[in-house]
Length: 453
Length: 111
Image 1 (tube, helix red, strand yellow):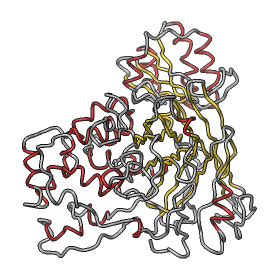
Image 2 (cartoon, chains in turn yellow, orange):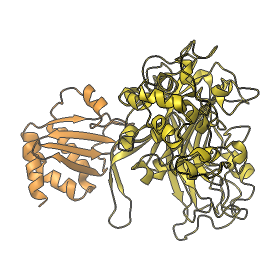
Image 3 (cartoon, chains in turn cyan, blue):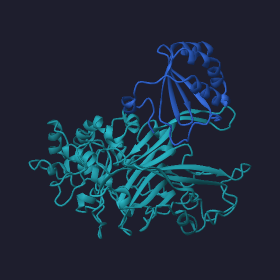
Image 4 (cartoon, chains in turn red, orange):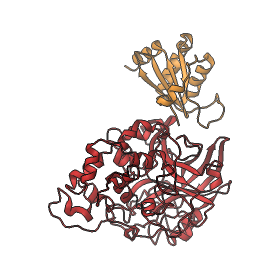
């Protein structure tokens, strides 16, 4: 997955588990950028009676590096508080929730947004209400109009923010990929599949929800003058100490906040970092990523593909055997792509190797987007930032398979299959469409209509 | 937010300064509601000040000026008894003491 349950320890702490980060110039408001950080993976819509919510003791943050040194210059922090109106009932709601102030909604969650920059800490909003989870047509009728849209708040600096449940927009065939690296459209070539015919992909996240923190800010608020490229990542932090209450009361939390989850580019910690290092990676900061660069330069998956698909990737096999560093992947994921590699495009931030989602904000939104982003000739898409619909699984599979190595070594011949790799999915495999406006991710599935996800 | 176990922060940490008796007593007073750990610390704290232990502290997060009346819970962690390394966690701060005698007495008190 992009980063859902990607490391052993964080997989046990879902509310702090970042799943996806998106950063793009807003297509309907191109003077702004939209930054989205998703948490709480793989939510079954019927998961009550204690429906999903952000962690009150988790500090969520979206960081922006405007100088290209892997260090945040602007950070938006999000702190949540839950109000329990009636502890005497087991119910999330005691009647239809028709507005954010409905007395029938028993467990409301509010949050504050604090911007941290070179001038200090600035509270941009507080007491902001999240929408409830989408329960079903009786409990949360008219969900989007009555509950989600009113939960888009304007902040004191003119930015807009939303924090709450959304339909999962990341599409991926987990069931196949985690079954010995199988890709259904190519499984007729898989060494373990023993003659299974090629088949269409199956979207494992269809009908599942996620919790999104989305902020839409003027480009001028998140860039340095003359430097249009920004690096974006999210973190979740917890206080160092938690003392469990012995009597069911409030737990004690003490000490400084300590980072437990991090996400910039999709699939980096998921696929490139070895399992024994993943939780450590989550505690580190992008500026420290040089220590992980060899996992990017020599990805394990590049060595596995020729083994799983014998004879399909001969040139990749030779590349791996030669132990050549994958400078293409290092550029895409750790420094940005310098000028001169892709005609007319760059999102290079400098020599500091740091896993950040790099967005060149001077590139306008595409009028005819391609879900393969830059690989599909669309410079407004991944790895130039990431839009909600970008097919990052196929892009990264193809890149790891060598499709981008010819950009840095013209003598390299890309295997024919490398440019076609996919898990066989597109946004058509979602259960509900994206929105064409903030916060762009679709209306969350409700538990009545999708009880068996 | 950085902590004293963060290698990046550790590199930036200068030689720790010894806490004043007043600051240590303030920690103990603030920890009045912290139960056994705080009570134990309170009984030992005179020794702490007397023996010139050293301490370093993470920057407070976004808390305001120190309030002597604070009753935040205080949690004490003896990281390394032999080295006398003790961490105090309160609010959003972490204070590291270096005091072998105090560490030894805490260990004895815990048996």
